Structure formats: C-alpha cells, structure tokens
Image (cartoon, rainbow, N blue to C red; front, top):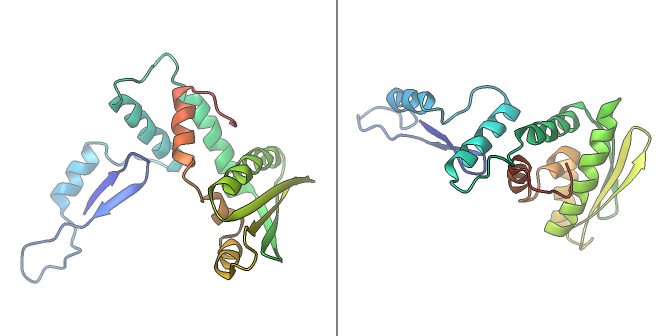
Length: 191
C-alpha cells in the first residue's frame, strides 16, 4: 500500500498490485510502506499536527515562501477553534421548509469558537453552492439555518438534513487555502 499526503493535506491511498499468483491484490507491500513512513510522507500524531506538518512541507517546497511572515501559531490557534467546534459543540437539528435549523451550543470558550467559525462558514457556504445560510446568536452559541436555494430541490434538501451541522462544516473548497494563508501570515477575513 502506498500512502501520501497531497498538496491539500488529504491522504491518497494506492494499492500495490502484487505480481505473485494467488496473492490478494490488496496485500500490503511492506517495503514501500516502510520507505513511505521513514521519509515522513505521513506525519505522526493527530489531525491538527498532520495539518500543520503538511502545510509546513508545502511552505518548504515553495521557493517563494517569505519565512519572515510565516505564522504557524496562527494556524494552530485556528485549528484549536476548529477542534473545539468539531468535538465540543452540541447540535440540535430540526427540519424547516427547504432544509434544517441547527442550534449549535457549547460551554465556556467553545461558545465563542462556535460563533466565530459558524458566522464565517455560513457566509462561505452561501457563496459556494446551492445553499442559503444564516446565523443568529443564541445563548451558548448560534442558530444556523441552512436551506436549499431552490426549496423544491429535494436532493439538496435531503443532503442538508443528512449532513447536519458537522457535515455542512466540511463543504467548500476554502478550507485548505484559508489554512495556507494563515500559515503564510496573510490577512484573512476571519481567524
């Protein structure tokens, strides 16, 4: 099995096809696995560490990186916010015409992380796809309402309801460019 992290931080898997008759095609090629791990292609540790390692590798590979502006700490702080929202938030979802309303709340600093992240993600979601999105503050967090731009689009309505709060956060192509910009020390519309 060959494993590599792509430029956007996703993990690409490729199975080595074994030439020996009778071997399963999904058999692990231990030699390539060992060499992949020893070269650092897969950063050890948890997701935030892997994200930072992948972005640092991208910055190192880019000869135009201005190291005097790089700010990995800003990226780390943003990943903390993402972690708090992803793992510390509570969500109560109800169906509304054309989509879903989600009360996303948390205790202490998690509530502010929810407000920061969902306000910004709501705006991005509204620009990137067939969605309408709004966020209103409630005690301990926000009420996030996401509906289909075309309320008669049953597939999009079902997708919104099926993805719910956590799944809707994953939508969009803005995450990796945002993380790279934070790491490069470039001004961002949100933290």
